[in-house]
Amino acid sequence: MPQVFITHEIPAVGLELLKGAGLKVSVHPGEPPLTRAELLLAVAGCDALITMLSDTVDDALLAAAEPSLRVVANYAVGTNNIDIAACTRRQVVVSNTPDVLTEATADLAFALLLAVARRLLEGDALVRGGRWQGWEPLQLLGLELHGQTIGIIGLGRIGQAVAKRAHGFGMEALYYSRTRNQAAESALGVRYAPLAELLASSDFVSLHTPLTADTRHLIGETELRLMKPSAIIINTARGPVVDEAALCRALYEGRLWGAGLDVFEHEPQLTPGLTELPNVVLAPHLGSATITARNSMARLCAEAVIAVLTGSHPKTLVNPEVYA
Image 1 (cartoon, rainbow, N blue to C red):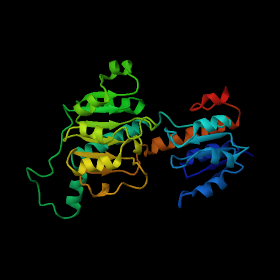
Image 2 (cartoon, rainbow, N blue to C red):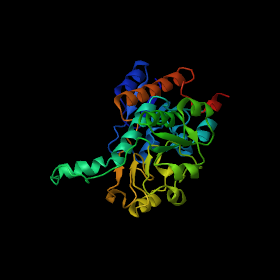
Image 3 (tube, rainbow, N blue to C red):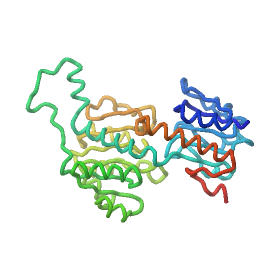
């Protein structure tokens, strides 16, 4: 009976599919998290793994799982935690969970944007702390979205979903991406701009680019100094896309209005000083955290594992070269 190891508990729909296919499934509950040594021991003899972004899938792990391992299904869209080339060399299929979390993540980006712009957490603390004395004309004045410019960095599925939401708020949308998407420009009414122009022109900047060697610290000290002092930056992509220490300095010095972060550079650790800033909203990586999205992610992972172990190709294949 093929063995599947899941490094963290996932929604039941995924487990039910795997067990219904006659697979032997073992799940680490997630608390406490697996140490690296424990993970290397756990993968021995497994035919399939379902991994999280916090799991590093590299040569050492693949070697620990040989010779039985055939598929790694990543419970995420991003695969920056996986050495894709190493998997391909070892004939291990990699899959991910695209599409199903697009709307949920775009919703969260706008939730963060609104929370920062309208100072919702500051207001919540004021009321809960018993310090609110009633309505005042100058109390917690924030920023409006209507008529403002949003700069979207990365115009993939999630970036395009954010552009649609921005249109609904009456915002002008600029975007920067590695390649221009003229079809999206026409369909969504967004305008391409070089990165420096986008940063200087935008009232809100929302990050939706994958983490690669080229995008690590894409937003650093130089880029932050291009932004307006009244601007807000939102990151629901990957933490290391932003130089968090530089961001803290910009916020502390008043060179930015605020920030909304769902991901962090050294996740789950935070850069010192970040939690002390009142103009930052911090979320614990909730981008895909809806019942619908997380169930769909579990289903896609299970379907990918079943496909590979029954001799088919998964529909969310990341490394097609493995079949070459």
